[in-house]
Amino acid sequence: KDIEFIQSSYFNKKEDTRFSSSVGKFVGFTEQGVKYAANWNKDASYLSAMKAQKEVYCLHNIQNWYSNIL
Image 1 (cartoon, rainbow, N blue to C red):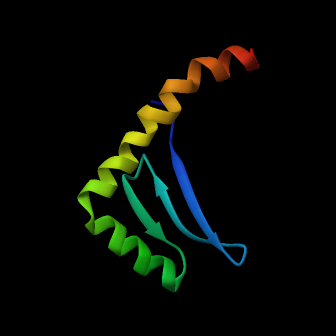
Image 2 (cartoon, rainbow, N blue to C red):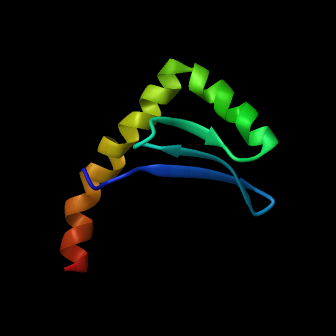
Image 3 (cartoon, one colour):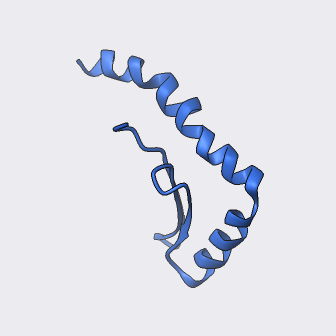
């Protein structure tokens, strides 16, 4: 429950778009980023793939990260 997958895209040192597994969709922060986010949010298969990244990347590796930290 405490794990969140976030993928951000930057252009000219400004955050353009962000996908957050807790929100479940892309959010745009610039004019162009809003357009990208709207297009990506329309693609159900791409959204499903991004939502699956939490399980694929985060939950798969969390035990390794915790054991190395502790």
